[in-house]
Image (cartoon, rainbow, N blue to C red; front, side, top):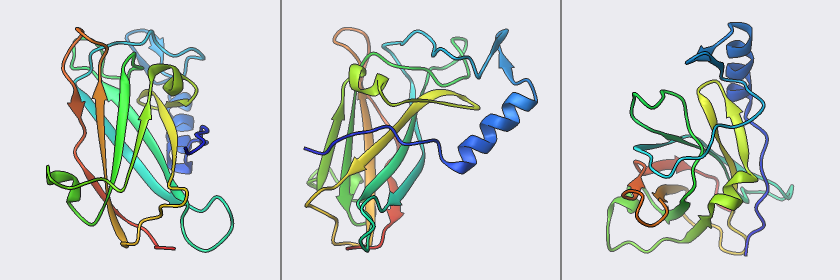
Length: 175
């Protein structure tokens, strides 16, 4: 089992946060950079994975996993800002481009984050609260130089339908 720890916001996201703070960015009378996240919601309409960077945590050649930022959104009029969630996030990594589009494809690795686990990974950004996740591949690194990451949010039972993000393809340096 891979040990999950929050990762710091990436430089581009940190710059956006500083810019938002300097410009007094606010939504519905509340500053985006509040110290407390909003009350979690069960139902979301969209998942955004803006950042998936291969990361070398052990200093040996090759990436050891991915640093991933995950944001959940509800359609207005609820809010245009990212929200926190009460459901479960499932992530899957496939070798090759577009492998996540094939229903017969088997993922190389999967990760599951409950709402409680996600709470430990909260991070602020200019567009609201999200989650900074470390997805390590342990002893099963991808052999391909291109991988596809998928994300699926499953709300608590009886509170809505699961929502999937568009599969994201990225290049990595194989070990």
